[in-house]
Length: 330
Image 1 (tube, helix red, strand yellow):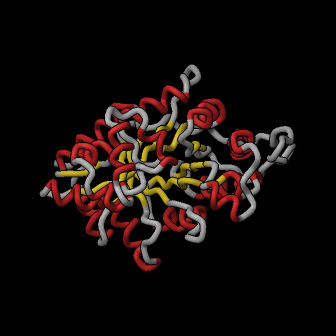
Image 2: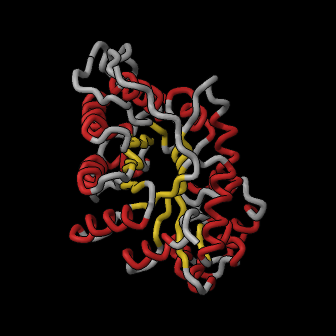
């Protein structure tokens, strides 16, 4: 049987692999991230773009020490047993370097491909439970409403099981994560107040157990604070839309933000005219010292890893600037 995931190291900082990065720039980007001292690279799986498992395999093979996270694999997109085989193989070949994020998937995308369930909560509960059992070398659980892999046993399992965390935002889904997963992945924006609220939904960890709490944040670093704030604004255009309410509800300016969105003719104007204080709260941005303080605040709120999504057209240059905010750097 596989060992349980190692207790999460605190204070980690990762970087997101931009989903629109040209293929020829992917390996230079991740190797540069490793050289700069980032702890993790997270890959994104959006419908019509690159697959998450293939990206993760490539990044793991091209680097020596980075942890690679998949954030997220939609539960409705893959058979649980075959998904477990993929993840177990990656974890076996690259011990201790994989994290697997599982989520509902965007409803529109999942409906488009015929994979949106009648009960998303039931699916993700069954799916996460089956994945963790199978990757650990345990027999698949009894067949459920959606997941059917009873008695399936993987013969090739890793020495160290990768953490399986749920990338979900609603209180009910986060409670499920507390019951059946190794932690939580919070999409951006993940201000400290949102992290704290999500941890309350997650509930207390079992005795002797610790959880991974991975958070994404749009990020820009510059010696000129205003330049950094300007660069990150475009990444916040959607935060006033209804589907992002969970990210905003716990913030002291939530109602003001909604009123600002209602008064704005479009999302671009909304983000462009947002007060600077809101930008600072909703992103990791500013001077290196300001960005480092924002990272520290998210760790203090309970994040085990803060993953930065670089803003700006030149992704390698943005990556270099973000590295100036790493906690161990001057």
